[in-house]
Image (cartoon, rainbow, N blue to C red; front, side, top):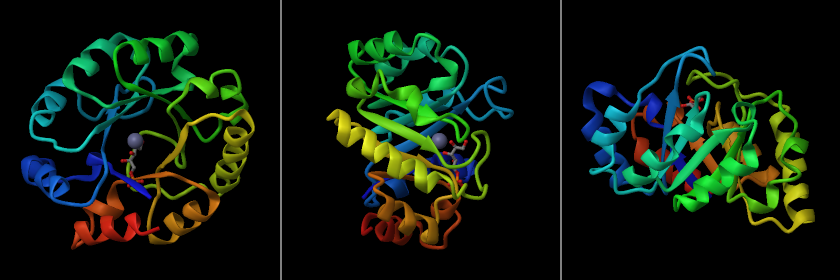
Length: 214
Ligand code: DX5
Ligand code: ZN
């Protein structure tokens, strides 16, 4: 399993130490949640924080943009060294163009779907995607409960990927814990994002290790 801890649940008074913990863990990526208070009803952190993190983060940065007009920031994220740019399908009327722009900037392109958005929205771009991020909670806050219907969505997406010959990975985000991670692994997920379950644990590195083993 690929594991992408979400920094949103970190202790922001000790951000350097938290990044260091991730650097020394078996985490594959670092998941960074950007919120604008418009696309989602919350604001997280922005470029000044990303710019501080980028030079010390030794894991590929998996940037999840919960913002309107995410395409405005494609080049800036690429310059910062982001490996993956996740844009929300619901925020991108010109999704096909946006995917091309992300690739042209040298990053992996991922499209994120809210719980209420059907996977059929991706039918015409799935072949071009490196990853699909299925939200398993409504985006905006950490620590919410997993939406059980997501398991069926993962299985349906796996079928779509196989049918179309796409190489896209399936990533999930929200409410991932010991119990739901097991179910998600069985449903065919490739990447687990997890915030509060990892950073709220007494031994976060052990939790990462246990998710890796799924
Ligand atoms: C929610 C964010 C998530 C969040 C997950 O909008 O996209 O990445 O940090 O938090 P948990 O794992 O606590 O549900
Ligand atoms: Zn996220």
